[in-house]
Image 1 (tube, one colour):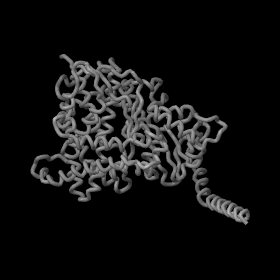
Image 2 (tube, rainbow, N blue to C red; image 1 turned 30 degrees about the horizontal axis):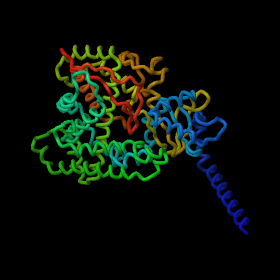
Image 3 (cartoon, one colour; image 1 turned 45 degrees about the horizontal axis):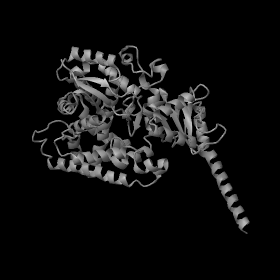
Image 4 (cartoon, rainbow, N blue to C red; image 1 turned 30 degrees about the vertical axis):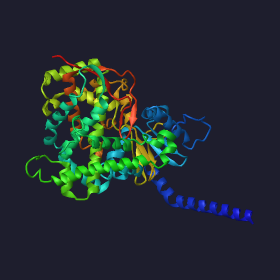
Length: 514
């Protein structure tokens, strides 16, 4: 009887599976084949197995093991670049647990498709939205559709030229930053100081009140607790369970993360309450600038909405600019010839004066240095999109990789900016080298192969402010200090929601004698 019952169960399951396959082929399968035929789609090559013998079916386990090893070594983005190169392709298919298809690409036309030409067919992806919204809430980074457009429109006036051109906020906090630096050639890690500087600038620029964490005489315990909690939540691999148990730990409840989210929310709510209590200051003429926080409070009284929008824009205003400064100054310390040439440009245009917005715009070589830093060390080295409908990407299929590829609904396409920014056929045979002069050529036009601020409708709205802030700080450092190399290791990434140097920004600083 038991055998008969088991046989019935097996037959029933097999029948159900066949029925589903027949239904799929009659509906979804037919539709997808028609779409693929219309666009002459061909399959993309599969990722090469680099962990197990090639004759073993891995079901994607080799990818998990390889990623785990490279996360530990701070070389994950390098490994993805190597993966594309080893496959001799610019778009490859990956299976996760043998079921879920994902694609990796460093093809500029595919990136343009995801971010611009077929923008409405792609989502940020529920996995990313859930991860980021768990501590940032829903704002300009995590919203889509009408909610995202509303967030962006409220932000837009903050970054108009008249607001960005006023460098007084930059100067005040940069002077405080410089006052904390050694002057005798002593070694200092500028990376944490850059994070404090950009936090102080961003909060004053956007909210009208600075955290003033660089003011060592102030009581900044609540700010320090906020920063610690914020950084913990932003790093998916820096949690207690992962450190102890590896990937398995990511499946366990993270109690510290819950405590950190509360610290973040409490700190943000305190800022909001202070704004509400002093809401008459702008009308009284104390601050006539357009401030994002003021606009939020006028638009809604919902604390959760206000808090989420604040945290979303703070992630952009603090983390990305700090990473750019850290990577750039770290590289400058290793490039004495480039640093000397930059110093000559600054001396000829600005001298020892405090730079104005117009001064900064005239520094062509400094802008080339910034471009090159963002090319070699993109702040967001990889990103992805999830297909909202069955669609295609223009390249990646067939033996030559030039045919379109069918992307079923729900499939992720990861675009690897780090790899794309280092393609020698686009950036030259010296694509792996730091060479700012490539940006001074009138004929050099990388187009969609260079996307330091993303592209399309979601292009970074604050890029002009970020570049102005970075250039201002670099100019003041170069004017005041000799910058000497102290770190002789190769650059490796620390990945959170952005990428920053895992070794920090260790340099020697010596006050210049003019």
